[in-house]
Length: 236
Image (tube, rainbow, N blue to C red; front, side):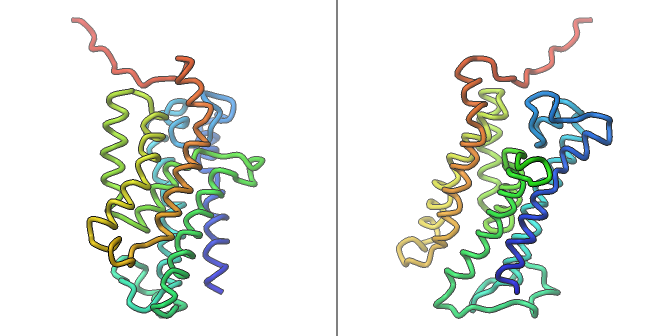
């Protein structure tokens, strides 16, 4: 049951349009304002900083919870179970060590389904956000050490450009390189023990994130993309 239940649960949880609900609680249809996107960035711009951060956290949890559940319930012999739901470990399906790649593939498939649920939610006409926060939640579960590096990259690109979209695109493009570098740095690339499904997943979500930002790329090239400008201090 775990093998199909985790991806299904991931898609259903990922499809919950938290941004839409948060904005509606303030009497706003977020689809009619700003970029029309239901993600955290548009909620922040239109509804406010506090609500945008709340939406960011909820969207990240949509990716984190089902992916960590899959890591807990779909195991392989020799798997490190330090970062799991420990009280559910005895309910897990365990693959042999030789079939490690199957378990890891199901882990990343579950994460991918949560992102697809967010990006193409059936509750809002198979539209949705751009998947950055949800992807971050998935990565926290799959490869927590990758996330701080991506955050630093995102912040640096944002500080330089003042574009949220450009920072997200840049961080997404760097993700596969960071994953492959981490495997090389820990010696797993040479031994062949590196997590190949994770690398494939990193490429897929990078391409998906850049594709979902295609309209932002056009606006950046046209000079019409919204920027977060520093507030000028009032002159006394």
